Image (tube, rainbow, N blue to C red; front, side, top):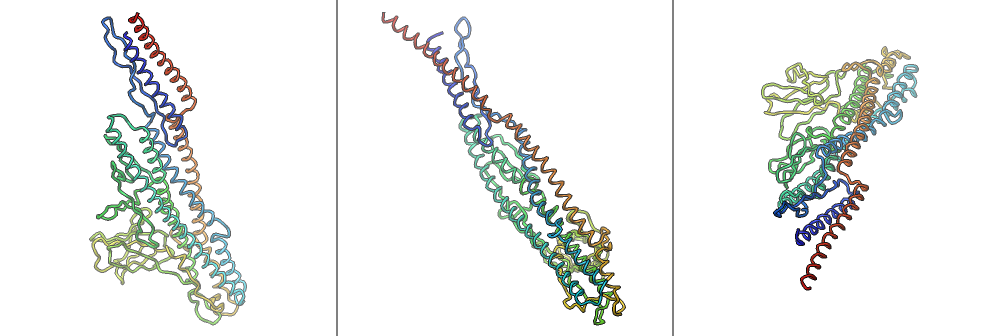
Length: 548
């Protein structure tokens, strides 16, 4: 072996182990960097040289720096992160509702019981002005509590809407940053073919994990190294360095809930709300659909039942002035709305309140016939009648009159009890107008007894339950969903932590291992320096020999 060959071998080793030390130092420096994947130097022997008697080694080359990365584990972290965040968000809001509805003072229980007790006291003393005034006071208290609870729930709805808007903004910022990193990665790979820019890849993966905290996404890697990011049923948010923004907009319906769509530029917004899941955004949408809206409607159904059933029974009695009982409460009408672009209108009223379900519906014209579908289950609802004023459609306690000449694509959202709790009002103000008797005789308490019994009779038929039972079922449903969500959130959090731990075990920096590598590479570097010194000593000896 020539001195130049020995010097070349030593120099190649010196450079290789210096780069190995650089890589080890980089790992140690980023041991606490979120999302960092440890890197490993890749060395390979140089092609040997033929020396007549055989091949002699020529040293070592640095082939690259490999990122210790497991795509499957990374995908598991993203998936569990999205699920965990969605459940945690749902649980956070669900606990608010559960704590209030189940509270003996904050919920409706106390107000319902006080009103029922006041009616029973009236039955015990139907001629007492004081007792009659208590009935009116407790009736007003019941109205106030319905209104306050309804307003509080709508306040949570505004929090949800605000959270959706914030999530959409965050998602747009993250996708813009991912697209920018895609550009940098493609450029970097173009400079040195097949040499991955590891730190940029880590940064992009970290952004995608952050994106998974906001909404579930899927990814597809292109040949040039860019990653496409999809949401929902494959709608692209990022393609290369191009971004399609999400848009938060007001949908149709009472209170106009915030919905999410893809910005289509001149083509408008493409609605994708129903396709989104996972992450904070998915959790907010799921909470609104599965708990908040059903709770508002269920509360409205209870308020409607109180108003209509008490009114119906009050009409059967006679007040102290000898007049027939009038409406005790004022109840609102069922509500409907139409999407933009639909000009037709319908008439919507109550037919049989006992059959009201608390659901919302979509009434649509398909060009030949009208159909009614529940929005929560997607199940069709049978309608009787023809939809005219003389023969309206009848379905789930509703009377529906439709346009005589429907427009193509006419569609209406029916939200019968959405405003019922907030619309309930007291109609009576004079204690003498409370219709406690049925015969008109002094001391007759027959109607007062019947009024007190209204709260406990199974007057609802879909399902069969009393007013008290309807509210208790609401509380039970909310409590059950909250508990199930809490258990699922705890389990999903553990799965996420396990996935993160597995990823860290495979890709994270182990400081003990890096410290050992540091010593090993330092010793190899020093040995390589001795090889170079040996080559230099040989060269100097040769020079001395030629001078002699």
